[in-house]
Amino acid sequence: RVGHRAIISVTFGPLPTVLMDGIITNQQLTPAQGSEPAVLTLTGEDISFKMDQEEKSAEHPAQSDNIIAMKIIATYAVYGMIPLVIPPLALDVPLPIDRVPVQQATDLAYLTELATRHAYVFYVTPGPVIGTNTAYWGPPVRIGVPQKALNVDLGPVTNVTTINFQNDAAQATSTRGTVQDRTSNQQLPVLSFLSTRPPLALDNALLNKAVARVERFRAQSGQTVAQAMAQAQAVTDASTNVVKAEGELNTAAYGAPLRARGLVGLRGVGLSYDGLYYVQKVTHTIRAGDYKQKFSLTREGLGSTIAAVIP
Picture 1 (cartoon, rainbow, N blue to C red):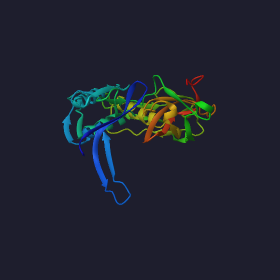
Picture 2: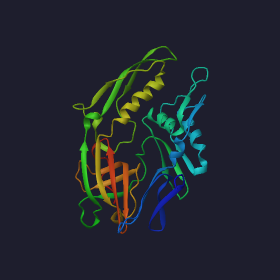
Picture 3: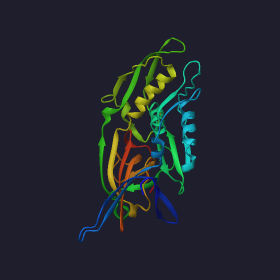
Picture 4: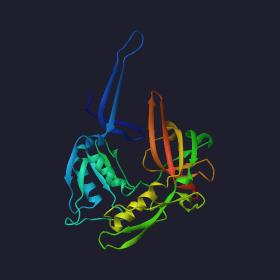
């Protein structure tokens, strides 16, 4: 029924993996006609749907962006929401006599807005166990243990059926300019040269001066130097995903669902494209006796930062 919570999990080995935990938002029924069976189509969204139902007007005095995020997420504990909030490098705790952060949006829209200021992301993933969800506010996860390797054209261990790559190095952008700091009333330089994200590629596109862009920083009225630096760094961090890979995975041969928003190793595609990637998106297609996934991977350049990809 529309409005009910639905949880979908799959089991590879002893433990289930939660694929979806969300709310059914749409129902479509095509009745049976002759030899054609009835078709019921259900559409849903993850638990973040509940965070996008009510527009709010609220003040968050003397709180940095990460503290605001933690506070908002905590109000959804009834859905098993586990907050995972990473403080930004440039912390800005406003004095109430100077500025009070004001929310004029749904919780989801406001959390996304706060994240975007730092080139961060906000999303909700199901798990780690059935009935719980992890609300992540922070930079894209590019550290930790990678998932099992994606294997291309490696004989009996092959699990990727198709894959293609794109290298758009010209989108890499650094920034430079000045800001009239609101606190000191001094004009100060604002620069960003490299991404603050952990490197996944040997040849960073930002260092390729033949194609990398330099953007003039344009300060907003009333900014502090900390806010300006965070804004400039966000532009650079958001521009670094220049190498993209898209393909299809035989999930049954892979032995587990490939999870989005984490690391994965890729091998069998040559020195330029082997190595670690950030999993940007996955799409599951499950039928009787068949389980496949389409995936999108990304990183900041060519070449691998590791000597070998762990199978």
